Amino acid sequence: MIDTMTARTSNEDLLDLVPDTEEPKVAPSPKQRALIEKLTDELRGLDADLAKAASEYTAHMDTHNLWTPGREGNISRWIDRLISKVRELKAAMPELEDGMYVLDGVIFKVQHAVHGSGKQYAKRLVPGAPGERATFEYAPGVVNRLRPEHRMTMDQAREFGALYGTCCQCGRVLTNEDSIEAGIGPICASKL
Image (cartoon, rainbow, N blue to C red):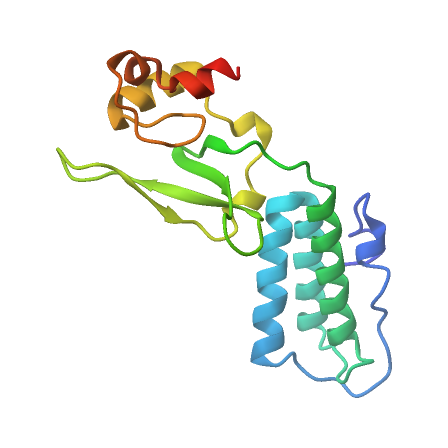
């Protein structure tokens, strides 16, 4: 059995909000369950230790049938607390520079939305067939997992530029042979 007092991390406020009660017990609805899992996954990308504690707490509540219903029940309060913690951690994260990143061997292009929200998002590199150009496809949530240290190095940029003919800084197609070899276009190179 998990003791919620020992399951806490340095972010104790996450687990402080949802005490056990004597109210009627229920299981989370499928929508609530899906939301708890989605938020815990988001939390995993922001703070792995806190996500582990959140998963353990959820499992404890499930195993011992301690969930209570309604807006004032601990299911709703737990979801509210997870939402609040994810927002708090996202707000505290520094914004990444637009450009190319490598995470777990996969290349991502980070950029700001030109229309609409103006928020950053990531696209995953999809290599083309031999002789075809590579493309990028939207990678939901990945921008939250990327960190400045995942930024492509100049050695990786050279390899990337030669292989895909794309600037490691902005992701534009390179046409000049020197730029392709360097992995970065002249405008982006002048900003370094």
